[in-house]
Amino acid sequence: MLRMSKMTDYGIVLLTELARAGIGTRTAKELAACTHVPLPSVSKVLKGLHGAGLLVSHRGASGGYGLARPAEAIPLTEIITALEGPVSFTECGAHGSPEQGGTCELETVCRVRGHWRIINRTLHDALGKLSLADLCAPATRLVSLSTPAPQPLPSTVRGNPS
Image (cartoon, rainbow, N blue to C red; front, side, top):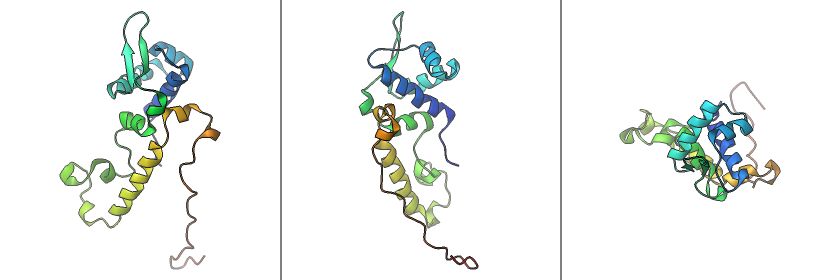
């Protein structure tokens, strides 16, 4: 099963909370209280998001964290990449060829390599169409990302007529 890590999920929750709050900053403690994300996790995620340039931080009595850009200018792919690394279904799609530091020794003989590139590009493009602002809107208002998936063809496996 493909899924994001809990820390990435927390990161999206924290960023949407900051986006909904509007202009200004919130402390890690305030964000933990209003999102119910444990404070140590909030601190760790905020540090990663700040390091990726998605957040600004201000020290002092009125300090805290705020969005580095408007929510409309922060694509979901950038959030996921900041906390997970490159968005990809396969290692070869995330890290390139073995010559480029990739991890798949079968890449040169892989017959589905080109398909994985298309699938990974489609995933990246779909996630890139969603912004942090979109995630703050009710789910029914989200833009349609694509047409419905094609229906599978009848099985042609021997012994399994459909």
